[in-house]
Length: 319
View 1 (cartoon, rainbow, N blue to C red):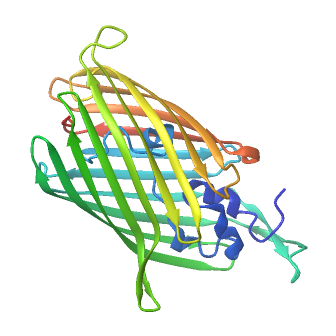
View 2 (view 1 turned 180 degrees about the vertical axis):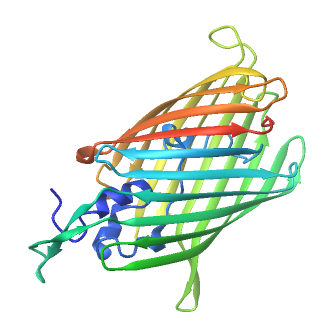
């Protein structure tokens, strides 16, 4: 049993933010710590977006994240745009929880008894834009911008946080079937003491390859990559993963996915999180498609995180 006014914090923040916020008042500062919303595809590969790092194609996703203790997170994401120029994506979430017992602290930090029950409410959203500045046969370069916002209501407080982030991507075509993607982003941005600063800085790389003849004799492919995140409190976060598929994700028919990865979150209830997942995609001859993905991650004494994403693909992803 976790005894403090932050009894909720370790369970909520494992979904969206580092545990360190618990030391800042039982999660009251969580609205300023919004983390990236994660689909089952990304969760299964160590939290790294491997299969479409360039953000292309058009789709709609519905995601559910469930913790064994009964906590639930629901998200909706859409993305689209005009060719390789400007495109935009938006996603949002709502967090639900069963009623929880509120525990109190004494001035010296010791256990101060119980103070009734409460039911937390959280919701948030973000909008991401990508503008491709160069698109040639050998490489592409784009700049990224993001606006994020969140509302959090706990027992006695209500917090609203809004922030922005900026970044860039580059993709290099290595040969007919392989591409290397690099990315970086800084945010949420702020201003203080006469200096511009960012809450965290993320950088990563991914290699994607398609094979005309794989282990089973048909079309297959894989993506592997890693990313690291440095936060201003000198807290490190990062992940690495592999995704392998059987079929052609951009062609008609069925494609099966297998994903493995690991995520490290310094100070979290489970600092090292091995992860895995499976997925299935079906596309029609007209290139409309449906996809279902599932991923799981252990969370120490709190149980297991279960991710499930159901999506509609409106157009093929170019490789």
